[in-house]
Length: 141
Image 1 (cartoon, rainbow, N blue to C red):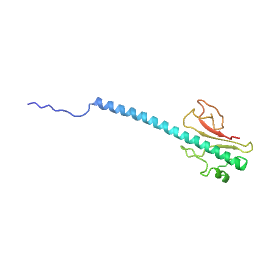
Image 2 (image 1 turned 120 degrees about the horizontal axis):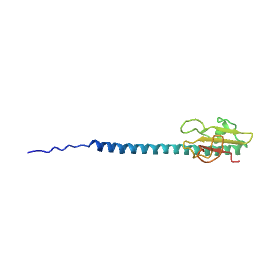
Image 3 (image 1 turned 90 degrees about the vertical axis):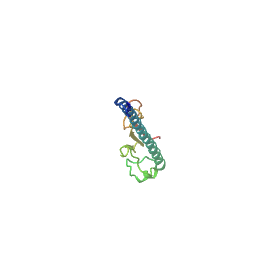
Image 4 (image 1 turned 45 degrees about the horizontal axis):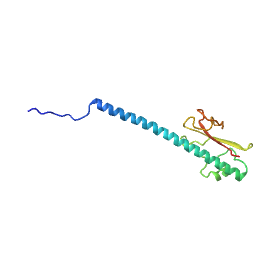
């Protein structure tokens, strides 16, 4: 009698197809995850800018002027109790420009996603389009 032996396992082609599909899924997942991280950091930056704008307007209503270009100002800590916010990626404080003589300020955060901001540079050159890589706030009054 002749017995037939069955071989259990996968062929090389089947393994290559499965590995290729897994590789494609990992690539797509990584790209989506990276985009989600960028959007999250940009949302945090925009939220920080609006919170700073609100705090500076509150400071102005209390003191009648905007603060000097000094983030360690004790009076400024009244309206920003956690201190000056920092960028979620770099951990550095956001750049700022206070012009107390003119009664104005400009604070900007550079965004991760290009073309999604409201300004083209960190000097509050407001504009939309492909070059708007910054989100800036300026005085309301």
